[in-house]
Every structure is written in C-alpha cells, then in structure tokens.
Amino acid sequence: MTVISNFDLHCHTKASDGGFTPSQIVMKAYERGLNYLAITDHDLVAGVQEAITCAQQNNELLKQGSPLAPKENYIYENAQVEKVENGSLDRSFNERLLTIIPGIEFSTTWRNEQIHIVGLFIDIENQTLNDLMAKKKLSRTARAIAIGEKLERLGFERPYERCREQAQEGASITRGNYARLIYQDGKARTIDEAFHKYLRRGQKAYVQNDWGPIDEAVQAIKAASGIAVLAHPRRYKISNLRLRTLIEDFVAVGGEAMEVASCQQKPNDKLYLTQLCQKYNLLASLGSDFHNDGIFRNLGQNLDLPDSLQPVWTAPCAERFGLSAANKQRLVHLTHKKD
Ligand code: AMP
Ligand code: MN
Ligand code: MN
Ligand code: MN
Image (cartoon, rainbow, N blue to C red; front, side, top):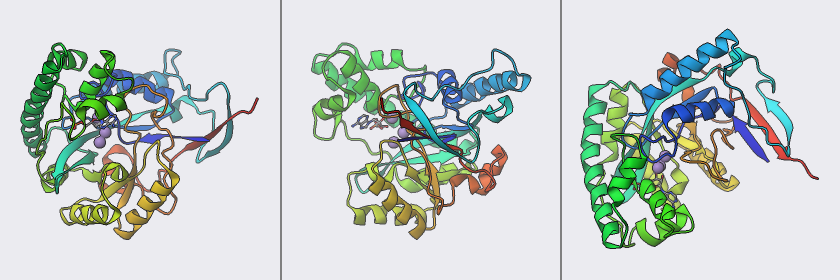
C-alpha cells in the first residue's frame, strides 16, 4: 500500500546533495501530482529561486491549458487506486498548479548529536538568515575539504573537486555527495554501505564538525519570517528520553513544528511522533527528504499526516503562500494489483 500526498515539505537538489537540478525536481513534482513542494537544501537556499521560476513557467502553461503543460504520472502500471481523500483522481489543469515553498535544512549540534532543523515559508533575502548561511558555508567547506583529503589518502582521485563538479556551483558539499562518489567509484555497493565503510562516526573518512547551536538556527528562521521544524526526529540514534529532552530544548528556543511523516517510516514511529507532537503542542510537518531516484523514497510518498494533528501550513507564516487550515492533504491510496 502506498499513499501519494500532494504536499511534500522536505527535499534536496544539486544545490546540496540531491541528484537533480531545482528545475528537474520541479518537473518531478508535477509528475507526482504535488501542489506544494518545499526546497530544503543543506544550509543554503541556492536552489529556491530556480525552482520558483520553473514552477511559474509551468503553472502558466497549465493555466493556458497548453499541450506542453506538465502531466501527472504516478500511478504505476501494476497499481490499483483504492481511494482518493480530499479530491478526485482526474484533476483539471487548474487543480495541478504547483507552489514552491522556500525552505532550508540547517545542520546544528545539540549535545554532541548532529540535529537537522528545517525552516519553511522563509524570506530567502533576509539578512540574519544570510549571515548564518555564510557562517555555515565556511565550516561546511572546511569540513568537506578535510573529508576529501582523507579520501584522497585512501586512494580516491580528486574527491572534493569531483563532488563540486557533480553539484551546482556554490553547492553545499555534504557526506551525501561523498557517499555517491564512493558508490560511483565502485568502493561500496550502496550509498548506505559507503556511509558504513567510510563516512560514519568512527570510520576512516569521518570528520567531526561543530555545526553551531539549535537556537541560532531557529532564530535565523524566525527572523526570516519562517517556522522552525525539527527534521526526521526518529532518525537520530538517541533514546526516547533524550529525544524528548531535545524537543523540550527545541521548543524552549522557539521551535514550533516537527516532522511526523517521512517515507520509509515504520508505523510505530509515526504513532510515537504523533504522540510527541500532541504532547508538546507542535505543528506537524511531512517530507520525503528526497535526494535521488531510488526504490524506497519518492516525492510525496507515504506522507499522510494523522487527522488529529495540526499541519504546519496552518501557521500564520504560511498565509503568504495561500495556505491555511482550509487546505487539506489530497491523498491517493494505491495498492499493487495481484496477478
Ligand atoms: P552531513 O551534513 O555532511 O553530515 O551529511 C548528512 C547527509 O548525508 C544527510 O542529509 C543525508 O543526505 C546523508 N546521509 C547520512 N546518513 C546516511 C545514510 N546512512 N545513507 C544515506 N545517506 C545518508
Ligand atoms: Mn542530504
Ligand atoms: Mn536531514
Ligand atoms: Mn534532508
């Protein structure tokens, strides 16, 4: 069973460690039937403007009913539509318009853990936000070069330069970029194995970095008129007690939302995050964290939010993007046909 949502508020482009340009991601979003997509690259917003421009051009084609307008294509050949919530399966051109939400995913360090904080509905021109991005860029670049040097000593050729060549100019280079390189060079069978063999804490090419405190990231997001969202809370290798402490600290510095739905998530994890979201009175967000084509993750996939939660787009800052409590997720439930 798969559910396809028309909202996806977390993904990456070639401006950081994603495999597609912002325009390519936008075209995929139309194909996947999305109406709202947030671009949330690591520590920068360099992909946002291209995505907005691409969506504006294609929305124009949809409004004109042009034969060149993007098409939907997400119902796999062997799938059966079980039901559609809050909408219909066949949508008019006007129901397929796409809004790009400007976003960012900040890396922070909290009690020696690398914690990610997503900012949504942000003003990308804001000075405080840009000052923090400049600071993060310095430390990210220094760390990326240090990882590259380690990999070079392990026999990889020009690793840092090749990561830069594969990404967009000025991109954030993360361990995700290096993992892909290691995989391409045949030194790991999967991206995950590249992390296990080289990039994880304790491995040969790991470089520790202090990303800066959570309050700095939350404050910059708020200064830019956005909302701070604790990213993928179940992905941190911390106990439930420690996770609750993290959320309490996050709330204390002004955090107002957390991701509850991700793809590749166990039902129990979503249930637990739903409880935490309610307990701490947070708004609920959802995001695939899509980076690249693969079997397990796709835009809009399995991102249904429980009805008991208040979605993040009910926040006042979402109004500037035409969103309010009146917007419900459209969910298309698919099952694989049995032969
Ligand atoms: P960095 O911020 O440079 O430490 O890199 C973090 C990025 O690496 C994350 O955003 C993911 O894209 C990626 N990443 C981390 N762990 C894994 C993993 N086990 N498998 C695949 N990608 C991962
Ligand atoms: Mn990443
Ligand atoms: Mn992340
Ligand atoms: Mn991410």
